[in-house]
Length: 421
Image (cartoon, rainbow, N blue to C red; front, top):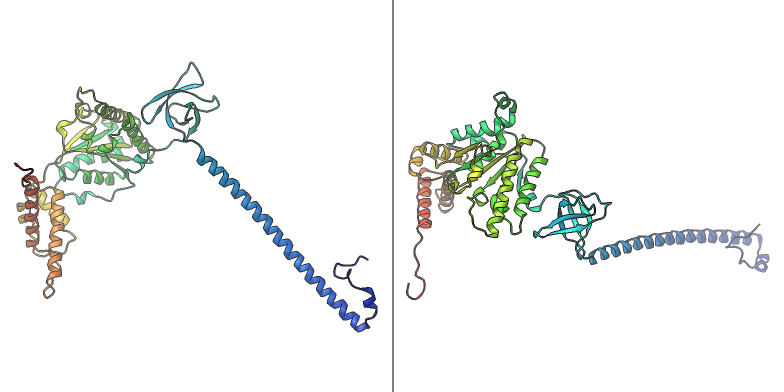
């Protein structure tokens, strides 16, 4: 029988001198020592396994870091859009860079390339290296998209006729399209709102989207004016592609549309040509609404007199609605809306409407806020007789302050400039 590691080094001569009792104690001691050595062996084996596992883990991390370092050291690949595939040669395609430059590039026939795809090019040979997934321009993603605006028609005062026209053209065409088909009416494509600043154009567009249970995509037309050739037109395409990809009805609201839809001139400047390209792409997208009955376009402008006739013709904007400055009855309704949640006492809306002539809805909202600030200031200064309500005098004072500031802004004081001014 083989001896264990704990007993193979025991001196046999020494064991022969032990008494029986001593021998039993020695054997018990040796067995305990053997168990201790076995436990230490198991502990060392476990530590060895942990060290080997750590070695493998750090080896993987080293390889990953090495791969990332190699990727960081690679030259950047230009991104282009495939404009056309050359049918005569299956391995060549016409691509366009973001700067507007166009190249005829070679590509691997195993790549599934189609017109309009985003591709990565080799920096030197300009060959197509890979096909990139389709993506939406960050400028389009950053534009305001509301799932459902919380603005309602009750928040708009003095525009009952305009609200009725918007509901007929937008809301009814989205909620009950079969009614239009029964009367042989093609679905409207868009509505143009025009009028002075602050008359509620954006507010009316949001309320219409809320009433039609539609998503609301808001953008400013000046954002479509880009530096490079073709960028503005590409943004317009991606904006309407984003609208088409959304589930359910979508209302696209373009504010300050006169920035891209001004009357085209014969000037042969690069900036004018780029704006004209953007306008032509917008017209093409509006003409393509027939394929998608869930998209409506609402545009707003303060300068309808400079818009190009091509965008004003019937079939593109089916309804052109003017939002003028509110009359006395409308101003009274607007004051009532903005003072609804304000703590007040002794307010006479008729006098406020008479004193606030030539003010828009946004101006009246600013007046109500200024009156609340006047009341708050008086509440903080008069500690003995504090008040927590807005009075008629606060609103009248706010109206006078607003008119005075506007008069100063419209007629700024002249300043002497130079030695002989």
